[in-house]
Amino acid sequence: MPGYDGAVTIYSPDGHLLQVEYAQEAVRKGSTVVGLRTKDSIVMGVEKKAVDTLQVERTARKIRKLDDHLVVTFAGLTADARILLNRAQGEAQSHRLNFERPATVEYITRYIAKLKQSYTQSNGRRPFGVSCLIGGFDADGKPRLYQTEPSGIYYEWAANTTGRLGKTMREYLEKNTPAMSNSPDDAAAIKHVVRALHTSTALNASFYEVAVLKYQQPLHMVSPTMVAHLVQVIKQEVADEEARLKKSLDTKTYARPLWAGQK
View: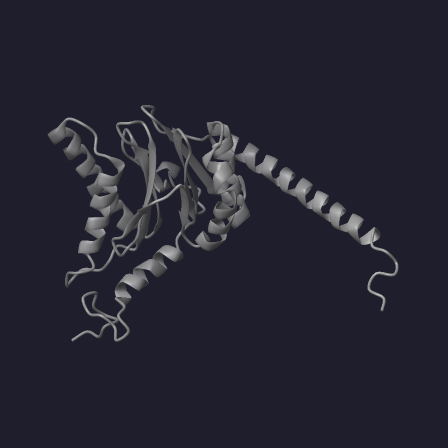
């Protein structure tokens, strides 16, 4: 008989489902992803892994459209995500066919969360090692952004992140969320997402992928050229900020009275 760390249906003595926690660890080792909800758009950004020279790049994309009004990205095991998102895409199409209207963002999020949770209560299965960021628009035209965890829980967010550098990026998001959420246009929102990625990962532009979804408009993938330009602009802004800070500190040091600190 498997121990409590080898079966998803057995609690550990301190009340944990260790297989679920192992799945969460797989998410924490995955590529960093970020989602932002502004007043009229959803912006998704991902940290891409290096693509082999002979590999077709489109097959390695981590931002997917579930329906005309739904976009999703994920951190964790890509194979698990493929199965999960294919089923979610089928459910979105089935809902549109049966009810003659698109599914709400929360409906699809709840479907994914329910599917994940069912894999934590059955023998012979293991939890999905995937955390999903799901964004989209409801019939009222308002953007929504949700996140699901391997355990099956989900929450709505103004901005959120997950993956290997999620903690570092969360600090940036918490500090800048008001400015990000109130971005005056798509260009400003995209720049915020690219800066969040660059602040956390410090990679070059070829490792970033960004997409924008607006109400009743097709999903727009930001061109690599635009992303590369934004990274250069951000690097210059960071250098200027550091120079101003250094100059300010030097000015304070020189302005200190000679008798300061003397007893």
